[in-house]
Length: 176
Image (cartoon, rainbow, N blue to C red; front, top):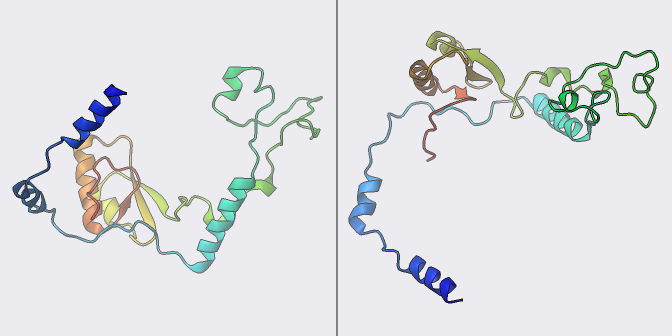
């Protein structure tokens, strides 16, 4: 009990910042202002509705487990899917006590396939010219994995100037 009081006393004893320190934080130089990348894409009402339908379908879709995934770790660990092909396979023959088999009816709306959950169309880029060709309202950049840190920072700056959203940034701009 005495230890708890001493800990609480230490928290209260923390020195408050002086007025000069607060003023110096506020006057820190800001980055050059440019078009801000949109957090959300510009979607037509139909696409927004279909994204909501896709989200509902994702919530209801079962987990498709491979045959004997409960038996072998190497089969079940990555949750990959392979179609059961055995002649006497109970899963292939859709016995109810076996897990569900992937079929066409579990898919999402065709218009939303390939879009991010927010609705951006992801495009892999590796040069500033490719970023300039993107439409900021609907496209989002994914910087290729083969790009090094130095060129990645150049690409992120080019995307910030063009107003393009980057899905895998390493430098995060401070929120305003």
